Length: 137
Figure 1: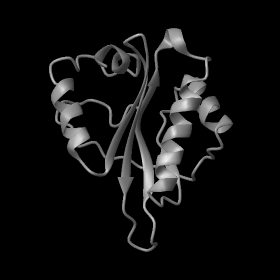
Figure 2: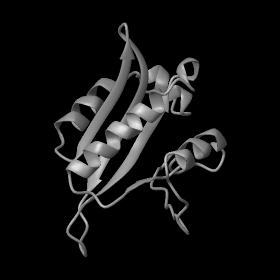
Figure 3: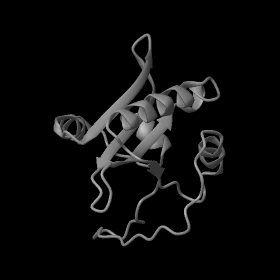
Figure 4: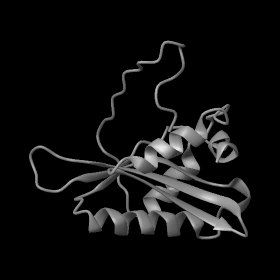
């Protein structure tokens, strides 16, 4: 998992990734979908379900989504996203959303093919003390 997150420009996760996965899996509004082949991790999709105040349904946010660079263009991302959408629908979500950094043009094309559209604006305030960029997705 750590190697896959490095492909998303999140290096150095090895020392805490097992703990974070356990915390995520214990939370009722979090889901982690993985694609594997012969024990090798090919892709991961992390979903967060968020209640809405003004409407009945929740919405689903893609927190992290990555397919191993050697396994891309083989339908793995499409399969993971489709499974995520089915899960979101089963939870009564009215939409899925993802924040995808402007430099990830290949990811943008993937999301457009899956039916995602651009929203007018996304604002971010970094709370990191170490001077890192905000959300890298």
